[in-house]
Structure formats: structure tokens, C-alpha cells
Image 1 (tube, helix red, strand yellow):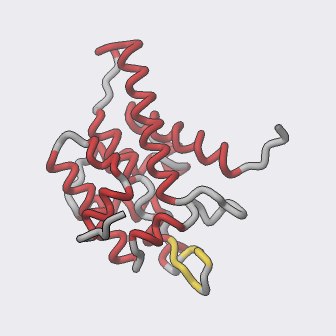
Image 2 (image 1 turned 120 degrees about the vertical axis):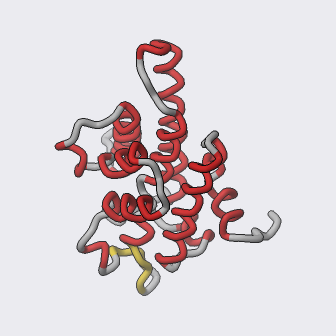
Length: 187
């Protein structure tokens, strides 16, 4: 593996699904949010590849980046199946869906911190959960409101909202992944 030249290159290498965002401006803005979150959170590319995706899962063996990438790919598969089945009868903006999927958990890089070799909620994470942080960071980088909506409504905070089609897809894909990897199953 060759050394990564820049933080941007490291992000693209760690999360190649970013390149699936066709709109070049949205793709660059999405990368900028990741650069900002990594820098402000005090992380490195290597560290975000190693940290658990949730501090709420005991002995979590799924990494943050694995979760982000898996859920994004699940969203794309769901969108493709819906498009194949229903054609234009259901509207899904693929770029918004991918950007939202990739940014929904970026706030965890501010919500979490490493202390004494363990990943825990940071001081600011005790006051704001990652959907709020992710929206604030993404808003600062001029991410479109449709993508901000996905970030804001993807978790329990969105249960009081009417979710967009893209947010419904992400919300369910995210919870499929979370539920399957976070709970002990009897089978």
C-alpha cells in the first residue's frame, strides 16, 4: 500500500464510495466535511479505520468506516431495486442519498474521543449527538438541505419528522446494520 499524500486522498482511499457522488461540487463538499471532522476531532485516517462504530455496543467488532461504507452500499442497493421495480413512480436522488449516507455519522468524530486507549463520548458528545453535530458541520460546508435532512432525521431524532424517500432508505439501512451487529442473537 502506497503512502497517502493528503488527508483528502486518505478519505477517498478509506471511503471510495465518495466517488459514486456524480455531482463534483457535492462530492468535494462531502470530502470537506470529512476533512473538517477528522481535523477537529483530532483523528487520523488510520484511527477512523480502527475505532468502533458505536460506543453503545459492548465489545463492538465493527469499525466506524466499515459501518459507514456498508450502510452506504446498502442504500445504493435498495435505491437500485426500487428504481428497477417502480421506475419513475418513486423519486430518489442518488447523489443526495449517497452523500447523506456518508455524512450521517460524521458527527461521531466530534461526539467521540479517545481517552486512555478507549473510545468514549467526548465532552461535547454529552450535549449533542452526532446527527446534530453532522448537520452543523455539513451546513458550514454548504451541503444541500436535502442532504442535511437525511443527516438530521436518520436516527431517533427523526422519528417526529416526515422523512424524505432518501432518509427513509438510509434510516432503515442504518438500523438493519446496527441491529444485526449490536445485539446478541440466539441463532
